[in-house]
Structure formats: C-alpha cells, structure tokens
Image 1 (tube, rainbow, N blue to C red):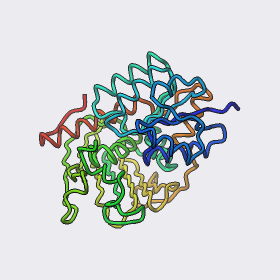
Image 2: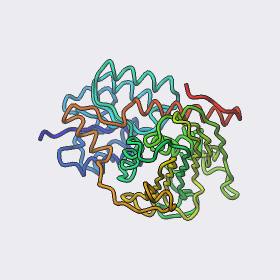
Image 3: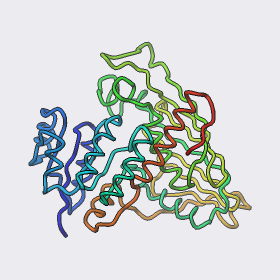
Image 4: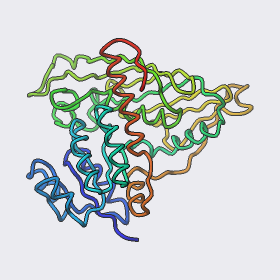
Length: 350
C-alpha cells in the first residue's frame, strides 16, 4: 500500500490534533507544514520531526510529494486558503465550518467539481459508532415517519479546568472574541450538532434561532480578547420530513466536558444517543417495545474516523463523506441561524 503524504496548513491547537490522527494511520505520513508565522511552522516541525517547512502556501501546494492537505486555520480564513488548495488539484480536508458565508461554500462546491479531487470537511463526530447506526435505522424507515428531534451539544470549559484554565489559553480566549475571528458557539459547536442531526434526520428547511453572550464573572476582556461572541444558542428547526426539532448549544455546560445527546422520535420507534455514557451504544425503542414504552441498549460496530476516510479516499481515489456538499449545507443553516438571531424572525433555508 502506497504511503499518502499530507501537508498541514496552520499550527494551532487543531493542527496538533490533525497531526496526531494522521500518525495513527499506517499508510500516512505528514511531511510538510506551513503557517503564516514561520517561527510557529519551525517549532511545529521540530516538535513532530516534519521534514518540510514551507515559507508560503503556494510553496506547499507546489510540492509534488504532497497529495493531501489539511486546512487547520481560523474559520474566517477557511475560504481564502481552501480555494487555493482546491485550485492546486490536491485533496483537501478542511476544518469545520467549511466557510462562514454560503456564497463562499457554494463556490468551493463548484470548484471541486471542476478540479475533481477528494474533498472533505472535518465533522469529526461522524466517527461515533452509534451515529452511523442511527443514520441507517432512519434511512431504512425503522422508526417510521420522524416526528420530533431533540439534540444537545454542551461543553463546560468555562467552568472546569480539565483541559487547563481558559483564562490562560489563547486558543480558548480566541473562541470568545469576535475581533479574533470567533463566530461564537453557534458556528463552533453548532456546526457539529447541525451536521450530526441532518446526517441522521435529513435536511432542515426552516430555523428560528436565539443566541446569548453571557458574563464571565466580573471579567469582560483579557489582554485584547474582548468577550463578545455568543456562548449559548437555541435553534428551533423544521425538517424536510415534517418534523420539528430543538438544538441546544452552549459552552455553559457546567459539570460536562463534552456532552452530545440526540433523541429521534418516530411514529413507529425512537432512538437515543448519549455520548458521555457511551459512543458505541444506542438506546432503541422498536417494534413491540413501542407499546410498552421500553428502550433497549444495543452495541454498535466501530466506524472509521474522518482522517482514515480522507487517507483511504486519496489512496483509492474514491470520494468519501462528509464532502464539501455536506459542508455547504451546514454553512447555509448556520448562516440562516445567524440571520434569524439578528432579525428575531424565522428564516427559510434556500
């Protein structure tokens, strides 16, 4: 099996995660890195023993030894970097969300069609085994007609110190400040939750969203990080299947490191996923259990993660999912949620 050589763009916290994930794959090697700050590229390469340190994005994209690229830069830079990667013809794995505006994500979808290369968005929770089982059950009609969806994504790093004190971590401070490119918890955690909900339950056609920026004690800023991005969001969504759903997203998940919960209710069955309890178990209420209002826990087979799918896609020249198409759909919903929160009105998804 030929080795797939990867280049990483960006050296922040997310880039370190990409590097670790790629190194878990036998036929994959990260051989190059570029950051606009060369000293950060140099340190990243030294830490992980990466042979190529590039002085420019174009230099990385011209490297014939690299067949795939990870875009791990701040969200506001995704489009301007991704469009160059796409036009270089190299396979691309872009961090979520694909772009901030749907006009940009639509352009990327068109561009990858023209250049016909492997393209993915890092909706990393697609790796959850229970999510794949949920997707298949709904697709096969095991739950009947979907009537209601209830989903939650909470993390609590504003109140715990498991991953360090957020007041001392630049990558966390950045998430709280619009001046530093943050679009709040809506675009951060919301992009993940919208992807996994639509992956299982289908397209969202209408949203009403409210967001809230909450006080961080008596501290309004640290250094030049002004805390003005949204911390909590609630989305009321209407689905193409006719169901109504609620999506709850917050950094104020006190007592939780990372909680993802999904409930899908149909007229013939229901499912529950609670990742803090188990990512490879799903609770099902099907067949005769519906009459008795009884759920049974079922084990789910493992599934490949995004990085494994990306490398296999390059190796086999087969387009995996989630692609830029799924990324564009999520961006359209995020954009509509943002408009809804600003206008205080329901917004239809075009």
